[in-house]
Image (cartoon, rainbow, N blue to C red):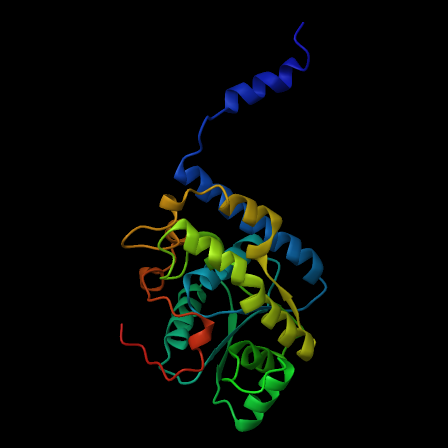
Length: 262
């Protein structure tokens, strides 16, 4: 008699030597959904859920999956910041909210922010810097503070899946991951702590990071595309193509005087 025969036979029936790209994308989607569900257990007593929305592919995927995975939330509030109304983050965040509005009532909190001298002084003081530009994380947390003390953000996925133009090989990806904590997350933690805001990062969950580590570099980046698993997932979720194909700029440009020319 074969020990544990039933379990062994089930494993054999489901066995695949190498997962396909599509399999990995499906695993990634399930991991993101699971991460959002875990966050929900911490927010379920809240009347609202807040999400930082840039109108990029990462935050748009979070919004779509949040609406689909946790339908019990009736008050969805998304926060977008930029220096002017024509900034791509405002243009594209309005696009995804308009697209999804037929499915759910989403309140879009648009903040057009012009940093003051006092903002510069406070931003540098909090970071213990003597000089420098106003940090966009400071402006984001400042804009969110009047509305909530809990917000979901889409950080870490660019470093995991090759989201930056500088990601041309595996070494560049590894360097970005090494710099993620000191250059980004420590700054986010400092400002969110200063303003008393709890930040949830679903892309940084154990499940999502495990799934992202399974992709080969060639499955992440090619000459024409970056972060290919997220692009594939976005198309599966029927996110508008204009958002999938928009130029990558990141939160660091939110206070720059950019205008959408696409």
